[in-house]
Length: 256
Image (cartoon, rainbow, N blue to C red; front, side, top):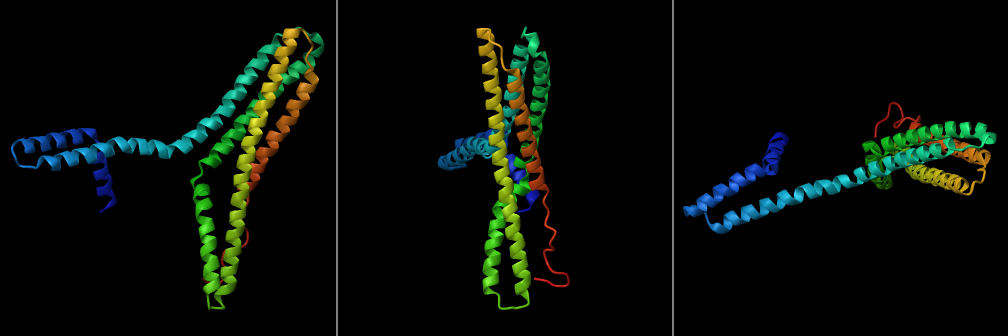
């Protein structure tokens, strides 16, 4: 069956209007004794169950991606929420002695929120990269097949090329694992940033409620340090993704 015919048939089966028309036609045939009732009922039952189950199956398959998107967007939304609230608190401060640090803190919060947004955007791009998902599944299988082929080959001329290809595949998989680890480390860093912002917000609220003077210098230093961590994490993701294999897959003039 061609792909076009298969797609057309699936579209036909997905359409509930055609389902209702066909079932009505079957009922009509039953009424004039042209069709056994049990056959019409079986068709209606199987088709109906499939129509109900198909959207649920599609939703389940899309859940991991949607869940990743929602979780990553949550980092950005929560960061902006903390930024807005902290801005509100520091703008209401009447302590003129800390105006330098207060203004600096406002600028740092803007930079920090942008850094979180950039990191989430990069992470989201990598999470949705189909090649990465494909390679994480296919490369280990390719390594196993190459190891078996290398162990079974009796052609001495092929051994160096197979060994080289196996080494390259192993290097590729090591980089993929490094990338996967970096992505999880990035999410941990984002969680750390949110925790820091939440802590700072709580400290400012307590200082405001007790009329104490918040240590804006220390708060500014902690955010500055956090921005360096975010910047390092973003650079780490770029470096891992940007790595290339300069060694040729197959030696020139040879074939596997």
